[in-house]
Structures are given as structure tokens and as C-alpha cells.
Image (cartoon, rainbow, N blue to C red):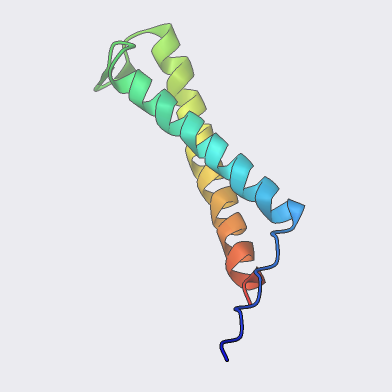
Length: 83
């Protein structure tokens, strides 16, 4: 007789929170970097050409590393939680 596979345990709320917030922050950073490079005048040798370009560049430079680290932490906890 075949025994059914054991059901996977649901992820704890802290892991889901890390994965959601890390992915969201990383997405905001990627979007702001894309907007800076394309819609908001691009980036020249001395930086972005507009004030809004500078603002979105600063958002990207803050969100990309933090979002990557937060998502990495969530993935590490998810891998450690697997049976």
C-alpha cells in the first residue's frame, strides 16, 4: 500500500513577512533604478540630469542592498525550516 506523503508544515509568519517585505523593497529599488535610467532623464557622467532622477537614484541605492539582504535572510530561514 502506498502511504500518502506527509503534509508540508505551513510557513511561520516571520518567514512570510521577511520574504514579502524583502521582495517588495527589492522591487521598489529595481523600479526606481529603471525609472532613473529611462524616464527621468538618464544618468550621465556626473549623475542624473533631473532632481527627481537624483531622488529615485537615492531610493534605488537604499532599497537594492537592503531588499537583497532581507530577501536573502528570508530565503535562508525558509531553507532552514524545510524538513
